[in-house]
View 1 (cartoon, rainbow, N blue to C red):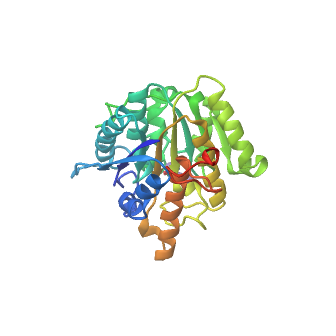
View 2: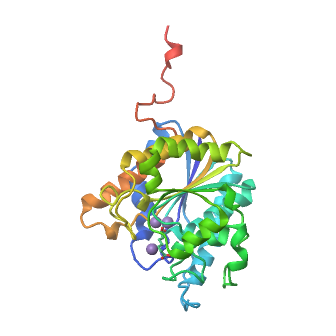
Length: 318
Ligand SMILES: N[C@@H](CCCCC(O)O)C(=O)O
Ligand SMILES: [Mn+2]
Ligand SMILES: [Mn+2]
Ligand SMILES: [Mn+2]
């Protein structure tokens, strides 16, 4: 696969410093070399240069509105360029507010997209329903056609066009929703596999149903938005909003493997890795390593082993 890696060192969607260090940590852990080794043709688009916003007073409860809006407008342009280059986009966060630009740019380039949102949280608060005012808890509200009447005018947000239909969105791993989010998902009939569903059905059935749901009807390119906090904090602790009772390492990788095999994976986000939220260097490395392994699984790495490209395959054997 042709892959385009975009670093998005951005943290203003939430109050905890450190998450802007995610992109370079994931690169330093060898993501690009490992993708090359498993046969991907990889181009690094570098880190998006986000312009600093000095005065950014809250609007209502919502914080850092101008910074988040501006950053996502830039990110959208870069992701569009990656898609126009015919590559699968890999956006390294940075906080989850960056999904606004990533999904927007993806959809602007390819038309309608389906979204698989793997996360402990739904990130679908509107600016008016959010308790915290943190925009990393709101990205999906700006993207869903069906919610646009709930979205107030915000500075640096007017460029956003909603681009996802509720019927083309699937959540996996939910275990910490705000009341308004639960109401929104029920009202819109969004497909949700909470951690209870993962326990009840097992991850294989969850992914069978997810792929059936997304692929049975019109096959839209899939945007996988992976929040590292979907994975249990015992495995990936270095993140801003950890919630106990998460996905095992194996379940997390399996989800990526199954989506990879649809052949429809067109863009991936890997967000919320925050080195300052790990209590030890070991915890940071465990989190970064898990992020890398999730991404490798998105691009065909099989735990049963892969041939490096060029070696004779079984059928070539004399
Ligand atoms: N629902 C909370 C927590 C959001 C967590 C965001 C993360 O999933 O990107 C909020 O709205 O602040
Ligand atoms: Mn989350
Ligand atoms: Mn919450
Ligand atoms: Mn999230």
